[in-house]
Amino acid sequence: MGKFRDRRWRLVVAGAALLVCTPRFVAASAAAAEPTGAQPPFRLQSLGHGVWAAIATPHGSAGSNAGFIVGSTGVLVVDTFEDPGAARALLAAIRKRTALPVRYVVDTHYHLDHVAGNGVFRDAGAVLLAQRNVRAWERTLNLKFFGAKITAAERRMVQSYVRPSVLYRDGVEVYLGDRRVVIEVLPGHTGGDSVVEVPDADVVFTGDLFWGRALPNLIDADTRAQIASDEALAAAHPRATFVPGHGVVGHAADVRAFAGYLEALRSAVAAARARGLAADALVRAAAPGLRSTYGGWDYFDHFIAPNLLQTAAELAGKKSVPQPPPAGSWAAGTP
Ligand SMILES: [Zn+2]
Image 1 (cartoon, rainbow, N blue to C red):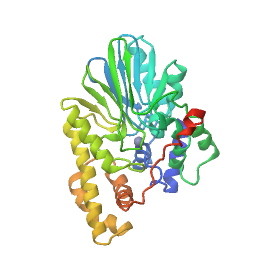
Image 2: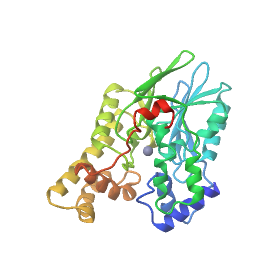
Image 3: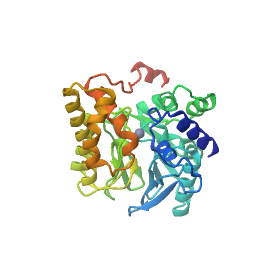
Image 4: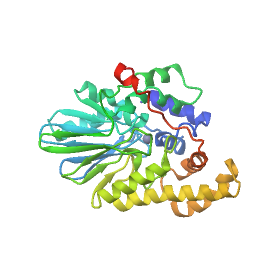
């Protein structure tokens, strides 16, 4: 815990907010004078049928949402938080509810706030699964969140994250006894994003393709693809409960509202670009209109400027997003 708190302090002091835009750091900057260790890392929310959402508390150490699904022969965990201590708390919460083994973990994507607790579950005997790019990116692309002043200890931490060992390209189905879990790859947030669907409970864990009443981190996003993925999810699961990667649990209307934010963002950026605006001038012109509709969503003040600038780069065809490793590297086992 202390290590993470120190890291956040240093980054907040350094004003590195544009690089480090996981909500954990937002919470730290919003409450810089408060101790952060007092809150539990997450609030456990029962979705019925043995499916649970672990919703990150605003100032706790989890940094993202997670969850778990209990079947007749074992448990599948979705994401492992930003902090191993929070992951241990999740494992303890599972142990209170079932004696069945934790057989699987799915990393919805590579971002550090979803994978840093992987080792806790690997050590408990779980097999870690993810879209295959996640394994290639987890120990490399996460370095960028620390900025140019990354310390040697931070570098070692990222390079020691426990990576998934079972990889898929488009998706996979897992049976927990007679309970079927469908893992589907959809584009938009990073280029290696999985959603975890529990058909018999009508629950969908979306990773960061959907944020619940919150502005998203778009650092790696293809917003056009993300809108299409969200609309497809809402259409395919009209009565489902959706567990977002960040923010509150929602339904199809909330997923559509989130896609609506991305649409509004793209429209505002396109209009500003059409007036020849860029950089700070673009932000000043486009932010107020979005604030009138979305100003009450979490992280608005933190993410609105980077959302606008990153979308401007995307619309200009100048945004760099994560690239899959070369095809041959898979056979060699190097990713
Ligand atoms: Zn993410």
